[in-house]
Image 1 (cartoon, rainbow over the protein chains, first blue to last red):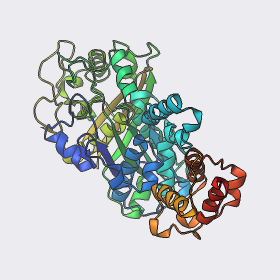
Image 2 (image 1 turned 180 degrees about the vertical axis):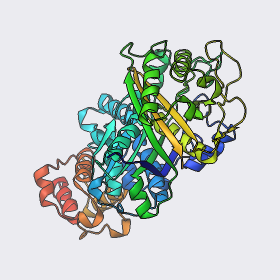
Image 3 (image 1 turned 135 degrees about the vertical axis):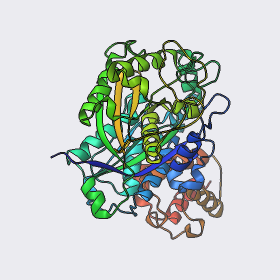
Image 4 (image 1 turned 120 degrees about the vertical axis):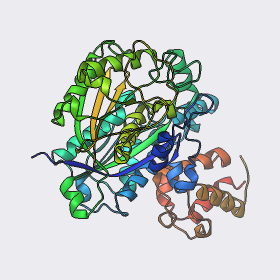
Length: 399
Length: 82
């Protein structure tokens, strides 16, 4: 039997600051954490928040993960040990790249000082599954634990996978999310080289002048539990995951399929999974990267999957505020969606000013919008699409 | 290769272990690795530093015999005496 899946903890470290409340407060106020064309977590000081050993034994993407998941688990009311059988608690963390900073530092050492200078910690720091392993170790989570790797959809795939595991009773609870710390010289050069990042240094999702994404870093972790488990513990339910859909474009290595066919199928599958229709959702927390190709094809996908309803819904992208946090994006955005639903608001797409004829939906310019539930719980979809043609969509519901 | 006396070696190893996260006060000659939360990954890093700074090769079989900070200091001291 399928279980209803509650969200009982949310943690985030983003360019808007450390903490989930900071994320939703500042996004709602229309603020931006982008500085000098980059979305850095400037307020994040790992040494203040983690032990010396934790800092030394973790690449930045894992440090961000630990702090985000510590926050989520504290909010869920978990102590040093899980409140349920540890073997029934999973940990799934997505990342686009993994320990990019470590790879670059160690490659410099290798070239400058030879093989013997390479750190024995290089492998455990760089591996893309490090975040899930370290978070599981820190909190004694002994169920299924691994990373998901699907570029900018990785965080959403992690949450979707965790949702399924809890829903079908593989585990009773799962800590899941995504992390990325890819503001490194190689990643910056590589994304710029392929024309993905913004030459103007502006994040303007769905705006006519958009010219690429702003590279960002972040992490978010959510605690998912069965409804029954959350009730037994007396845990506060912050929201629900009610649907998940994932597809592939099978079209191009980096470009989305222009008609939005793959993305729209993911949206349709997610709605069907939640057993609802387009009229039952109130907000689209968009992928909206600020690249010319994504934003037009995502708009097409929304119209294709939601029909007329697409024109009635507020569609906002967090990336106007924090840039594109790659493998963290799906998790940070799902977190922001649950928090927005909890407050009954759709925050604005920061940076949107000029209408593009290919992007003709309501992108919530200027100010946050109040959402009207009309007597039923508020719902949102959170879209994530990754290089490689990976599409993942979550349906989230207010508590 | 540097020549160093035991006090200097102990001081340097104390710095390294403190950098690994061990509590400075707890780092005595008698302190064993477990009490300092120094594990196998730390020891491999320690060996790398010892080799680079003292030219002393600390292999896995040596590390197995070393239980305390004093054992490591003596190991390095014996091999750097001229």
